[in-house]
Amino acid sequence: SKPLCLLLRLQGFFLLAPTSSPSFKMPDTVADQIRLTIWCDKLKNVDGVMGKSDPRCDVYRKDDKNPAWFLVDSTEYIRNNLSPVFKKKIFTNYEFEGNPQLKFHVVDVDHSDANKWETIGSCIIPLQELRGAVGGLKVDSLVNENRGGSKPGELGTLTVRAEIVNGRPDDLLTLKMKGINIANKDGPLKGASDPYLIFKKVLPTKEKMDVEGGKTPYVSNTKNPEFQAISMNLMDLCCGQFEQPIYVECWDYDMASGDDQIGYVETTLKAILSKQPIQLKDYKEGRDLDPGQLALAQGGIVRVPTFEDYQAEPNKTKLTVSFGVDFSVTEDERVHASLPKAFNLYEQAIHNAGSWFKDSAGSLGEAAHFNIFGFGAKFNGEAEVSHCYELGRGLKNAEECCTKYWGMIKNKKVDMQKQRFLKQLVPKAIELAKDQESIGAQYHILIIVTHKSIDDANEAVPLLVDAADAPLSILIIGVGEDNFALMRDLKPVTPGIPPLQTKVTGDTASRNVLQFVRGSDRLGVPLTKTLPKQFLQYMSKKKLAPGSWKTGPYVLPDTDWQPAELMPVPDPNDQFRELDIGDAANMTAPTEGAAGA
Image 1 (cartoon, rainbow, N blue to C red):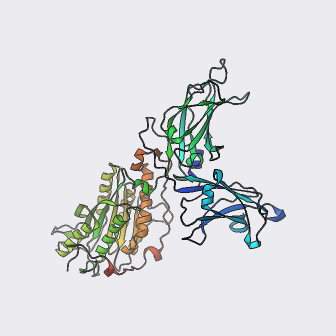
Image 2: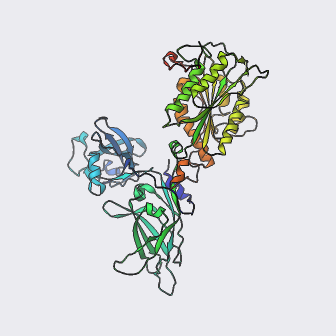
Image 3: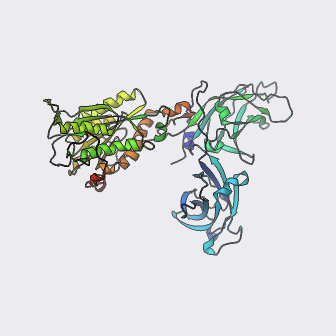
């Protein structure tokens, strides 16, 4: 996708933090990556007399543990240029164990087909040399061993600037600065200067480099200007380092005689975000003229959050899991079987799903608590069939849910019926999720375990459309021998439309909340990929920032940063394939009371 900073800047977007004094603490600045800026000079033209080469640089890496070259990333290719300066930056891990080396492979791309290219030359540079290079710059000659090598410089040279960075490549710094008693450069007759600011990056060589978006428009005739907000890529300005030097110049705009510099200051992002006044220095040494001061009026770092941001302390988003267990009639004895050393199919499904929330806390998130409901039966001797009967609330883990489920089977407290509906279970999940929404710190996952297709699939579609507006995801696990063909009615009316649409009113779900998987041994993708994506789509729609950001300088983009995707055409060979039960006997035996003899 296009760099977020460019997209937001073109739209004139600035989302700024409150004007009150900041109470946040600075994020940790442990660098974990190196950013590579690459350019070439005097490349050999391999296109002949018809034109010039269209170069691209592919960057590979290897080390002692991984001796085969693997592709890290590639720059863009530039048309008809023998001295290209590649705009795209390459990021690689800041690790030096195992003697890591980087290979810079420069190719001439066939612009009619980017997959076709011809080698111009390459060079290999140990990562340790890049880190220790003066000013972070390393220059090397390209060679082409496939053509018998080459003389130094014959194929051109490649220059790399290596910078230690932290943060994320698309972090966007937004600043709305103000001036305090800015010196008058226009003389007493005009009253005040027409000031503007320029932000520059300070290189390791102490050189100053312009940053895209780092210049404010001028403000006419004022000594206390409120500058227009500007946005810059945080990596471009200071490599994401809050205490790395930043150079700021203050100028007076003068259309007639040329602009005059008022002052300058070398400061840090940490100092700017503190909102304390920063004293400018006069651009001419030895003078007593006071150029004035600068301070931050509003600002923040626009960041696209990840699922891990919501799972970070403090104030992490808690996940609540509700199981909906189908107790309707089944002829498959494996569904509710009593196995002394293994789980039956239902226990296996509950256990496997619960294990993901317990064992995958780093990538998915540990559930705060569990609930379990039954449907498709009469429970505890009641006369009415229930499709949402509470078996347990606020349970600690999935094992307790298994105990509640098995207690109903073992003690024969359930009268199984022929049909199974979602008409009560889904609204209950929506109710629970919306109760949590007022807290703003929880998300609900409904996991339905069934041995047969739902009987009210068509009627369930409007419920799923409503569910898209709640902090809720729904996972249906199908076990047993049924082909679950009717589950297709829970897919879009027409493949390619937005996630879900009712056939009656035409109302469309704002995001996809449903995932069906056949067999509880296939929960990896739904839980570790699909569920976090649905979670982020909800947070994006509601513009809810991670709780962990309350103590940091980060703010959300003002755009839909995790848009709902179009539903792909269902693949019957994938989503509705036959069940691979697996070896249930090798699973951990249930806890005491979870299965009967």
